[in-house]
Length: 310
Length: 264
Image (tube, rainbow over all chains, first blue to last red; front, side):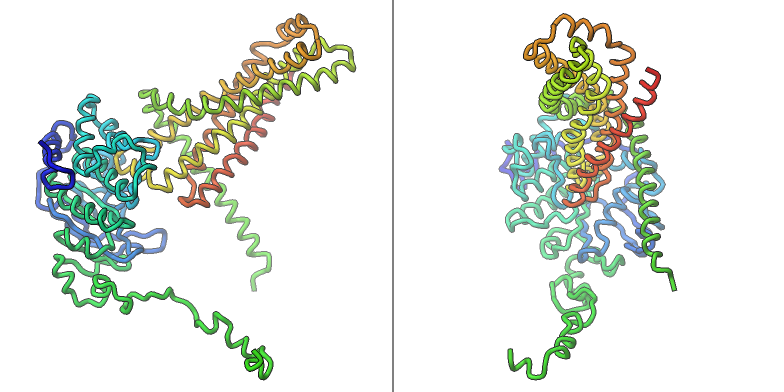
């Protein structure tokens, strides 16, 4: 008997599907090592504009790792580089023993079949029902009978607490529900890596807590490795094993959540504790405020005693 | 000191380069679409689904427009032919006008407005909401899964819609000419039968609408795929689809007509 959705016991269903993984996952048998993703001296630029500079990262197998930083620090770009959507300008990205920049399109697609990604706002296919969204990858990549697909989809939806919503269309879901359906879709083929792009953005506190716990539980139950890109500090620090902090395209700090909380670097400290004052300026660089408002010119133009007249 | 006209010249040059680049992207896009069409033919259900959205849902506007265009042709043609005492040739006038020109051209313009704009908006929004990126991350090629089925559905739909337009137009001409005005029914149909040539008129009309179908669907899909992922970007792309497709149809019609009917 399956437990209630959301309860750790509900992940029995996922454990079952984890065991089924070997049935339909076409993997190249790379000898397992402790490191799943390794990023070596990666630089990336859009034209002449550098986005990432000298990035080095290691993501161990089975861990939940957070990639943090303020908006525009290059987190999502790094995620896309790992997914092989873009290639680094220089440096190497190794995923499960394969260098992504050396892979052709077919190789990248083969690798992506073992990756799951949760997009910031879910990115559900709006013309497909919840059921069909979750079944999408199974139908595209695996030759399974429809009855088996149905069972697997129901297991995934049960794990995120939305089995009863399988007939709904994405437009009928709330933001939190859409994110959970997208999560069920992302784990459809039991990926070896789960990548989360800002999974907590725009969620109410309950949904946020549910998603944060699901990230941890799915990782542990499925034996996956997770990379969470986020700037929601407290939620992330509660569920991850290790944190990398990016600022302005450079890796500024890394460590366990406790080490990051105790970090004295002004940049990290300001970010972790959400302080307005610090090295990260609130104001976008601009000219002098008085000059912008033409206050000097107005004073010069106003007649003598004009201010009194007003 | 640089000449005052330099920024203008620079801006014209930048626009020209931008347009040439876009043409290059569009050519590469259609090449990729054709190269990745295997999935569509291996899974015909994908094309059938799009045929419904692009073809079947366009039928109402095509049929109603065809009927009215045919009725107007019947009225105007009768007025003109009466001057020369040859109103019995009304069927020929209506049929040839529709099969050779109005059928392919007007149905293509309607198709661009109805189905082309919808394709652009749909793909543009899929891009803006990261659905295409999600598909790519799931190792599913969006060109093969989303673009190619729509392309072939558009190419198949267009000649069929043009044929329906022409058929409804002939019926409209018949209603006005024969039923309402009283032109002799026998001469209406028999003259049409003897004057309309399958190869010269019907097949050429089908070729035209096939070419228009390729042009409109290509433009619509490329504009959607290339649209900036914002509300303004998608709206601009949709407008460009209708404008560019309409101009392309009219220009292609002139070129095709000059090849097909110049010796007639």
